[in-house]
Image 1 (cartoon, rainbow, N blue to C red):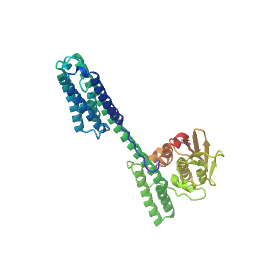
Image 2: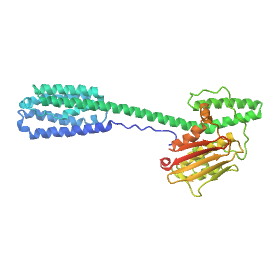
Image 3: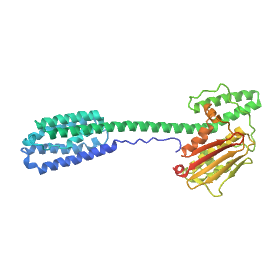
Image 4: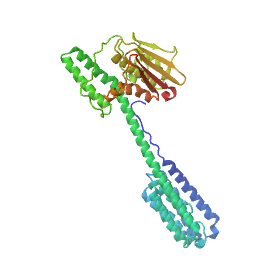
Length: 414
């Protein structure tokens, strides 16, 4: 997942339209066969043959119209319902005994297809309108409607309205789901950009502020301006809803020495630096990326065998570990010792970063997020959340800090 999220919208209506097209064809065949087997009882079979021929041609010619909602226009719905109503009203003309017997009409159950098209296209209100017209036509055709006629009319009316209501609920659910997916995709993209900014621009601004304060003079003014821009950018990264601190954040100048660990790097940079700028889904040894952090004050302990993850997942884990080590340098000092432990389990990979610094006071992480400092929230936890894993931080004042990164193999491979 590089660069952007794509929201896939699945239409719940498409199966309904396909089912409607099949229903119209099957009921058309049923009406023709029913007439063929009962042809002898029609006083005017020519009328029935003429109508059934029109119905067959109309059904086959309009199949594309019932393939989706866009093609099923209001004009088609009106014309289709007109064909069904005409067939109902022509039944007594073709069969004089139709009004005295509870026999089927010329279109038989094909009429329900017209009503269902109204239901799928416009919901329960359109279904109620179409089924009401069909009910009136059936009552007129019977002359003196029987109990069976009312039963059939009521059944079509209730069923069509129920289907129309279900379609409206499904559409509303689909819109809600699509909107939720869009919001999730936008949020994940914003977090990814925020991590990149935190790992690059914000780190540079913080370094300029510390160095400027240490040098004094004009450099101090430059450092102050860099600090103000860092605060403003952190507020923007956090969503623009956080209050901007009144003063520039304190940053005691830190000495850059052999023990300094670089800020958490971009995953693509980490892969390229390790010579692994190939397919991000190719397996990659996590130890290769974590080894770049080893120096006189950072120790790497690993199982002695390759710890394989997809390249993009390995790069994200290395970047999260780099962000944790950068926090060690910034908050525990360049003289602090850090240890990286890699554990390779069948179902997950665990990377632990521990230091011997003074630890994090209780409530400091929440305060940092409130000030727009999203290093732990985005560069560490955000990365692991995107991989389907977790990042746990345990710190005891005076006893150091431990960051445990857990990456499930199944989710990381996806």
